[in-house]
Each structure stands twice: as C-alpha cells, then as structure tokens.
Amino acid sequence: MQLPAGVESHLLGLDSVASHGSPADASRALGIALPDALRKAVSKRQYEYLGGRACAVQALRAAGWRGEESIGTQAGGAPAWPDGYTGSIAHGAGFAWAVAAARREGLGLGIDIESIMTDTLALELRGQILAPAELFPARAAGADFATYLTLVFSAKESLYKCLQPLSGVELDFPDAECVGLDAGRRHLDFRLCRDVDARFHAGFELRALLELRADCVMTAVMVGGTGIEPVASTV
Image 1 (cartoon, rainbow, N blue to C red):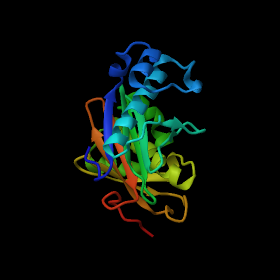
Image 2: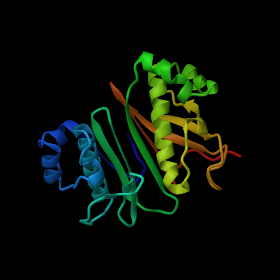
Image 3: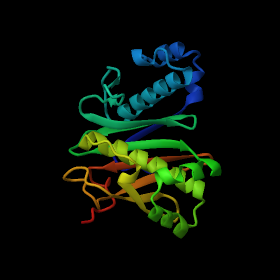
C-alpha cells in the first residue's frame, strides 16, 4: 500500500511473534510488557497485542521517534502514543500492522486488516454493514460481493479509528456510506451521513486506501496533512 510521505508502516506475521515461545517468552524477547488486563487473556489475544506494539515501535522509529519508553494503553484500550507522534494499530488474518507519523494539527490515522468473508457470512452481515445505496459501487465495478463487503467493513473500521481520536465521537456503520470503488480496487470513497464535529460534517468525503491480498484486505484512512486528504469535502 502506497502511504503518504511521512506516514510509516510496519507489518508482522503473528506466527513470528509466537515463534518466540509462550506469550511471556515473546514479551521478554520483544521488550514489550503485557498489560495486567491481558494477563489472563487467551494466547492469541496476547500475541496480537505484542505483535501490534512491536509493529508500532518499528513504525515510530521509522518516523523519527528515538524514545525508549513503552507504548502504553489508554483507559479505553487505544494505544497511548508518545508525545509528538500518532498512529494506528490493527491485527487480523494472522498479521499485526501499525502506522505512525509525527503529529501534525488535525492529523488522523486509522487502519484495519480483515480476512475476506465467506459468501454465507457476507449475506448474514449485509444488512448491518451496508445501506441499500452502497450496493451500487460494487455493481458498477463488477466486484465480488463478499470481497466488497469485507472491504467496506474494513474501511469503515479504519475511518472510525481515524476520526474518533480527533472528534471524541464513537461512530457506527450507518454513519458513513460508500459512494465509490476504484476500478483497480486501490481505494474506496465514503461520505459521512451525520455531523461528527465542525470539520467532519454530514456530506464530508474521505478516501480509504486499500490493498487486496489473496485471503485478506488491508485498509487505511488518513486526514490532516498535505497529500493525506485526497477527497474534498462536499457541502
């Protein structure tokens, strides 16, 4: 995925995290402490946390961070990024992924990874994720429905992870609608269906970058800097 200049990315297979041994062994090998809230979690969740934080450290270092402190966790579970930096972490489909950048005014980053849904699951979840009008971009592009639904699901997750830290508002699937899918499947365009704050009002459009792999999708939504906001707001 081609990210804007200044936004750094790191991807890691979770099997490489598990290769260190138990979650406790992986924690020591990676130099990342498990929070108390995850001490009794299943191993998979612990490996996801460790992998995500390991990716975040690498992305931060590529973005210029030279600190030694660990990346903590806020009360709601979101990463506590070091002063002067921001980012986003995702894990799914056997991967951990993080992006990071030096903090700029209004900069928001949100990413997500999802395994491609089966046809059966896509039909079950269709009504929760899509409004009827959101079927048009898939038909116009001739996209496979299960893949398209996975892309929209993932992109909405990225969009909400991008906007929530900036606005303080929790968003849900009906709060944005897909209005376009690039023919090469390189991006999806979305329009907000509600006012989030003074900047992100109903009608504001955002672009989700995407990478389509054999069995999963990766999406990213970024706002707040030159080269990061390719879709203009509409009134």
